[in-house]
Length: 210
Length: 70
Image 1: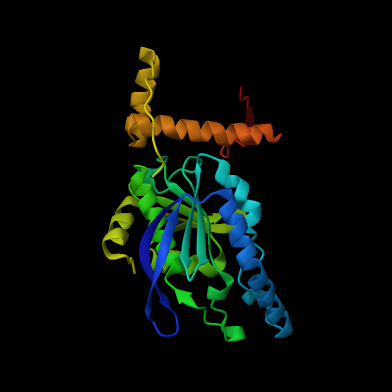
Image 2: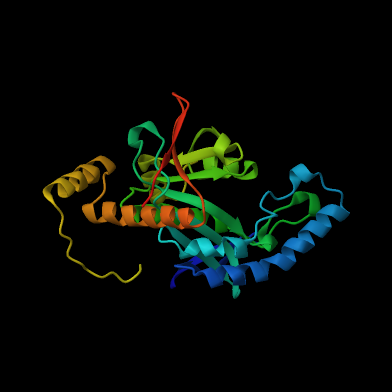
């Protein structure tokens, strides 16, 4: 596993904090992630139930289990990236590089990095209904930036594709400059987004596509 | 980046021609095309080993054909 120093921010104070962005996560790392996150996940669910929060407002990745995704990292096309701060995994991402192709007309059929899963640690979830604002910010955007970088390293010119959970649609469209290309019946009717080569260039230059 | 090792690959003219065409069409180096092919072959093989089947679907013609993988 290789490590790269970065900074994220404490959400409340907007203070920069040193963190590490890690490449080449192994299946056993995801087991550690799940063991660190599952207790907090359970606490969040208990709070949601106790406060009678409408199910539609629950974090949509609340049922994810990274231990179950661990075997996928044994495949050549899958890569795992993580962000560590305060000696804990603050966010994790899995990408695929061979089984998805660009749908945007300009580069249709060309390879891209498919962002399979991206999640921040449950203590970083912002859940206004529970008065939770999340400890750190910039984790999702840092991991997304790494996916665009990976696409460049692979010779895919920054192209990235993904199916977004509804709560993440605006992040990918407005925050990352991805193009929405319709709902996909083969993927639980999730909205498919793609980052074009041009949008990727812009994103890497400015870190922003808004 | 993972460590990389070098190997020599002997291809027929037809195979090299196919590789060059794919390289141009996919906008990838020839090494990247072969790397992609290996990743895809491994992914398909793992799913076939689990008892899954590989299909190609033509939505317009409503046709679905199973691909035999050796």
